[in-house]
Picture 1 (cartoon, rainbow, N blue to C red):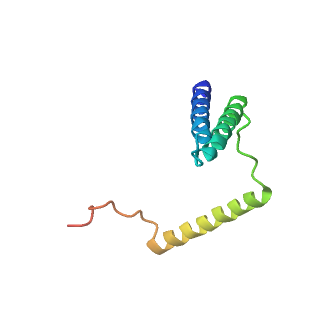
Picture 2 (picture 1 turned 180 degrees about the horizontal axis):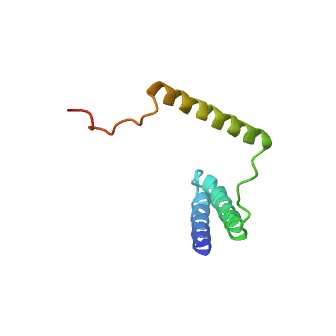
Picture 3 (picture 1 turned 90 degrees about the vertical axis):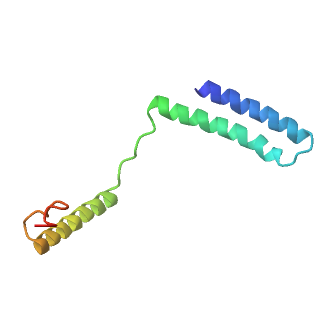
Length: 98
């Protein structure tokens, strides 16, 4: 797949280069864009093939924040349970027409 993409990027680069040389000034931006996209595709493929594209370790500060959020969520759920009693809510339509 990478080879196909690089061939397409190269063809687009050559096409835009010929248009830019013929006087289309907007094509100069695309002349710079296609090689950058090719380099990005190679970088992404390298990261994917080598397995280096992994989630970085979460910092201790972020872990503490997640623990605080989990504790706040537990307190909130306990508050909701105390307001509504310990019974589970009825299913939709279960008590609608007795």
